[in-house]
Length: 187
Image 1 (cartoon, rainbow, N blue to C red):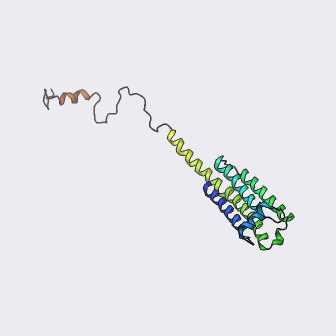
Image 2: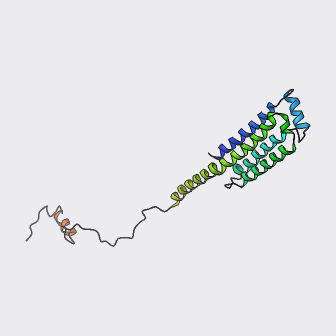
Image 3: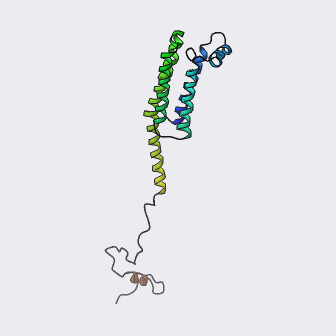
């Protein structure tokens, strides 16, 4: 899973939370949005849970996509803030008296925050570290010196097969000289 997948999951959470918020429409979307946003009441509104999802999305995109962090602290901070806010909201508000939706939205938000934390910590960051090391090995291999470098200069000593005589180069030159003929008498 890449950072793009984590961003897609954040967008999915945002869409889920917003669709759950809009689903709780009694009397039209316009009237419900006016009640939730313009006449905000901490004890009865779900809008702050939606803003919490926007906060998580913006913070994690800023930390991991823009700043390219490779550490888990950003997800830990957003998860701690989200969980603390949700726990306080459930304890102090009247959400639980608003029916099943009052239970569902905080629980879904809480569970999604921990699923994202687990995925980032155990899937995304280790895979990115592995990809980074693989990329770095390719870069290092390209920058390395060639394996066969020029050897020391020869001083004229070459390998001669055992059946040839030392200094036999002159004799071969004489035998193949066209002016002298191919075969010479050895006397």
